[in-house]
Image (cartoon, rainbow, N blue to C red; front, side, top):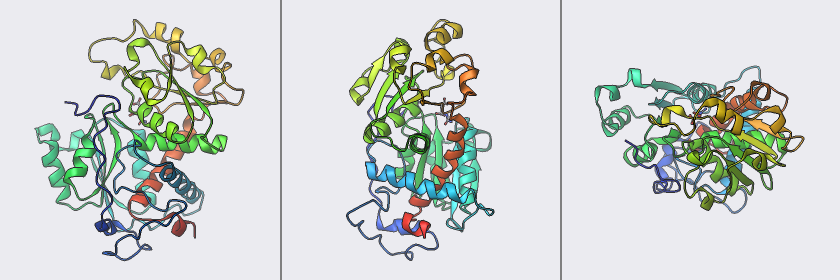
Length: 357
Ligand code: NCD
């Protein structure tokens, strides 16, 4: 059951952060019950919404705020004591209804570094496998009064549904084919650290475009920040209408890579192809769309190679490239923790100024 599978038809934006968001304010922030003052003109100091459901609709200043906050969080990771008390006494539920290694452990480490109490639900430990509806599960989670719920779900729109029914702040950790906002934020952080900016860069995104929530979140983010996006994949895996979101679409990899600053490879998501195959064989896919050392040479000399993981080596990417000097794939994983710390911190009402001082 997929609630929203159409590109660009994201569920309605949730209501703005109400005064009651002060409920989740960490120790050093204004006292509980105090409404957050309107942000003064100038750089953003808080996110508009009390949830992070997607990148679509975020302002450039909000994205910059997350990335700047993540930078301070990354510095915390270099200290001898890598823990700060900002989310002490807050409870975060990690509600992962789809397999996940990286994203789930990244959120868990981020929560622990911020001293939150965490609780993990997965299909094997949840009554969803006993037939409980998402609404009933949500109501039961809510009854335990968590401050935040991090949700990954196979149904697009599931986090939006929780946001409508729960008082907790909801973070989307990947919903169906729709969005994966923290992945796009960590990708943007990685690009900005390496290239110093996002604006004006050419980013080539290659692979299974059809099933990729990573693609959709990245496309929204990169366009919002003024980057140029080229998309490439076999015609069977290019979603109809994707060009209308402002990307150049290529059916051959060579022109897509030419002169690119960043090459982002996407996994071929066989598990979502539901019995059909979008291409004859993995070998043919690799021959036509695989990232090889020869193809990397078409991009700029200092281009970086990215992949959200998990990788299919020898299908979308050659091992020599994945482990080569231009690859920032493991940096993406490291940066994921800092970016998720930043998101948790900001949604809990923390401010960048407070953190830096
Ligand atoms: C991505 C996902 O789950 O959407 N992976 C991730 O979050 N690290 C991409 C993928 O599964 O291919």
